[in-house]
Image (tube, rainbow, N blue to C red; front, side, top):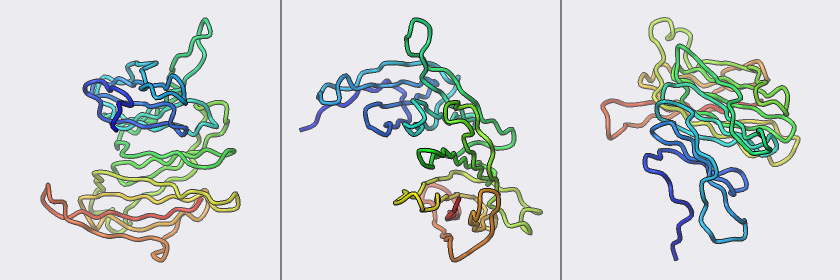
Length: 241
């Protein structure tokens, strides 16, 4: 039997559950970030909005929750290509309110996708950009969500080709590989969708600051998009941290 979990506002374009599935964040075309809470985990009552606030004048493209070990916080990709991080804190009168922690800006490229990963003692953030670059950030202070440090940066472009053409990626997808044990290396897979196949190359992250090309650890394949002209290449990147 179907039941209503939550009633979303008109214009909602993206959403994400938190890690316990007790909170839902939604982003709208008019830049509103709305948080829905469950009145009781054991209740069958629908989720209701507890907060709704403006984070951008345009549309929110994607929302992603920070792992619960680091508090209640949400990252938002905006339609102007910027990335902002919002945290729920105790305000005046002990009431809860959301404030912006930090903003990631890149004047030359748009943010296409993000994913948080790591462990209970180490939080990392992978950001994929429209110019084919990917950046790995690490949180320096687990109690301060504005203390991000760039750990690594690499470009999905073959050097000889990059001299004659500029990378233009239409979309990207990042997925962290689940950790089975503490001894397992942190790793993630990254796919880029570029309009120029020659601008794709495979790289593997060997350490926190170095990358190298290893075809046996990565994969690539091409497909034809039925809704547009031409073929696109999706780069498969397996990165170890």
